[in-house]
Length: 426
Image (tube, rainbow, N blue to C red; front, side, top):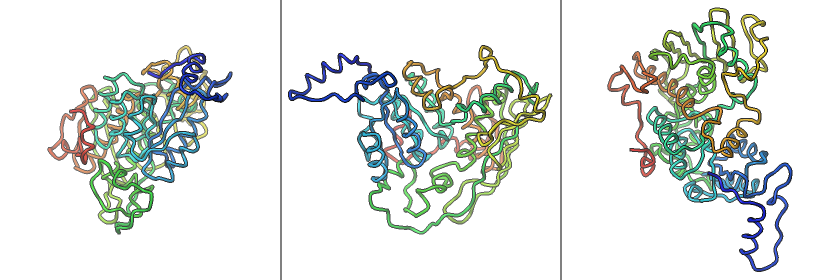
């Protein structure tokens, strides 16, 4: 819940707080476009690097939101971001979470921190926006899903394409049967690569490397570990582009149809895993899967999702200015909003999150935790199949592995370096 205070109450409590004359800024009292401070959603930002800083700027443009605090392991980043939003900077995000006036947190850290911080934030009663991908393993995904449901907080996943009208339109057309029964789906995501220096280097001044590692295994600092693409391509800290990029087109897949819920998910695949250098996530993958009776092919390539049906195909991608189809006529259907199968977002992805909090409605976000888990689990199943060389079978309704060796089952979870493992529910 966020705290509401009337302008009169704000002025009354403010006058009791100080004895000397003071000035109430017009920005605190609000105006026709911006509610008074006490009626805004108070937001904190954890991770304010490239993506995190963009999300901060997006939030600051929303009249209903008030960015009040930031946390980051880099001193220069957190201080610059705090100055930009006129908030407070924290080295340790736990101090930020302890604030009772914070309604929501936006988590844009490296991948290995996404779920641990989300769990701690939800336990602290905060609404959460979590950048993609979700967890480092399926156990983290399911733990996040369980806790978010139990606490009833608002969750938004960072798959922003759901708030782009062209992606909505393409998936809505598929949902309405424009191409008939879906027979197959093709998904492409940009490829990973080998490389990265393994040479130990001095930790830069102002950088809390121990906190940055957090739940990940203790490893020496190198110049490539803590910056892209290393943040996405080191297995201790990520799944690689199978999830880091795959999160987007796989999310389009589950938004456009429910093939992944229609029956057992059977995954087989091959790929390369670097033997030298710092980067050790899968690249050059070739995955073939069955989602119920629908065929899925997942390979490296441009960010795209192609739905192939009885009556043609429709391709949806964030990278395209518009959707494409086997027959342009398939895209010309007028969509009456009264018949929508999917949620239309009118005020952007972050705006949708803030609006859902204002309504106190966990079901009002376009990408719920359940939707996040659906696509993220598929990324993990692909990784497990490639690394073990096995055929992996998953029950999407019971959310459990049906077949798999001891090695495959062990990959469903990952140890977390203490004290951070305590964040995981028992």
